[in-house]
Amino acid sequence: MNFGELRRALATGSPIRFLLFLAFLGTFGTANFEAIFGLFMLERHGYGPEQVVGILTLVGIVAVIGRGVLTGWLTQWWGEAVVIKASQLAGAAGFVLLLLADTYVTVLLTTGLFVLITTFLRPAIHSLTSQRAMIGQGAAMGLSSSFVSLGRVAGPIWAGVIFDLNPNYPYICGAAILLLGFVLSAIWIVRDQEVAAPEYPLSNTPFGD
Image 1 (tube, rainbow, N blue to C red):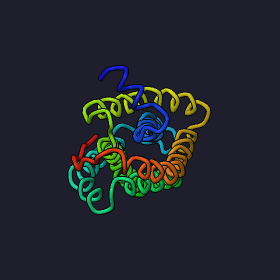
Image 2: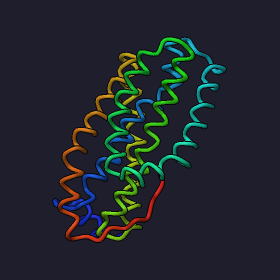
Image 3: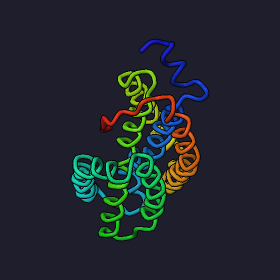
Image 4: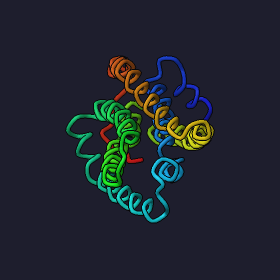
């Protein structure tokens, strides 16, 4: 990818500019869960390595099922735009449920539900970015992955800083970020689709995270 393609992707009116921002925002938001999970479990519930490992085992199983089985089916059935918006809205609610969980069983259930819901987000964003790419799918996927990586760097730093202020702040912040992403997506994804449809051919090639 050259700088000309990068400028086109980020230019006003680009059908993927908002999706690149969303790739960063969604990753930044979910990092507020991932980065401080062990610390939050210890601080909030007093869970040690044994309990955390049990939860993480469930997380791994749920993530495999969500990404390997359900993501493709959901995007084919509802479309990427609906999956993106639903994942963000439900993910914001999931953050709140994580804060309300007060027993090991409810922590397991809410954590599994949250991971399942948010597992759909990045693959759906990547897939829609591929469909709307006007700079070549390879270049678009490279950019999308770069914005995800940026979120994975910035998100944990932010989560660590606000965790020191209050252990609940990362989850509150994560909920607010995903809710913001939902509101913006409800406006911009539809608008960009109307702009992109007559100008750029769509591809049906699915992409994972």
